[in-house]
Amino acid sequence: MKIAIFGSCVSRDTAEFIPEAEVLAYVARHSVTSLETPHGTDGVDISGLDSAFQKRMVTGDLKGNGIARIVKSAKGLDFVLVDLVDERRGYWLFTDGTTMTNSLEVESCRAARDAHRAGARLVEFGTDEHFESWKSGFEKLIEGLIAADLWDRTVLLDIEWAAAVDGARHPQNDRLAKLGRNWRKLQRGTREARRRLSKGQSIGEAWRSLGTVKPTETEEYAHRAASANEEYGRYRDAARMMVASTVTRTSSEVRISRSHKWGPQPFHYRDEDYQSIVRSVIQQIGVGEA
Image (tube, rainbow, N blue to C red; front, side, top):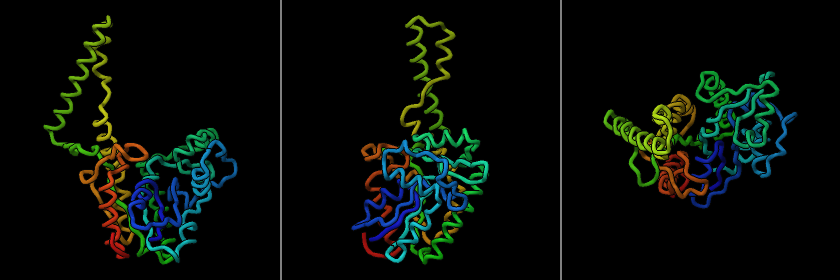
């Protein structure tokens, strides 16, 4: 099956589990905001990027050519996958009103630093300003897909971030569960305070350590997922209203894969999660059996 992607790892990793899949167009590191107000490549130095793929994705964002790249392959496509992962880092708004997605690549090659020095400001994901510009950009994406006769073959992957690793229970948020987490945190803090006292630190220094207890890996994943899923809420609601088909998974239905080739992250799932998502995509589009 021939596929186009406007999104990032959620769609990309899902596509790897689609039988005989061929990705004809992959638009990543590209906020939909750049479809309307692309900054352009002039004055942006991305020479610090070693990967040709990274350079191509960032250049595409700067030119705002995401829709054009998908439309170019429209006649041969079976369907288009869309996800919202690349919105999570916000975008840079320049003084002339143009924008650049704040991707990890833009940050690593110091283009973000240069943008800041040039007077641009970071519009953060989840703010009202970001949401309104994202909504306008997403409408433009949908208009482009409709014009290319791709709208009814477009699937939004509305997959929440996983809050637990494979084999672990999804964290509960009832009062008893919260009390348990707070108690375990207090115990860790107490052990750290005792350790500091045994090394000769003052009671005051040891006491202050109780307020700086680092979360466990499990707690960190749970917090990141809960925060992201809440921030994504209105984006997902708006996107679902504009697309033809949606495949949804809640945080409790998916898990973080420790063996994921790109490392464990709340948006890197188990093989069985991707396989389940693929079955739903095929059912939505009706192009074959997984």
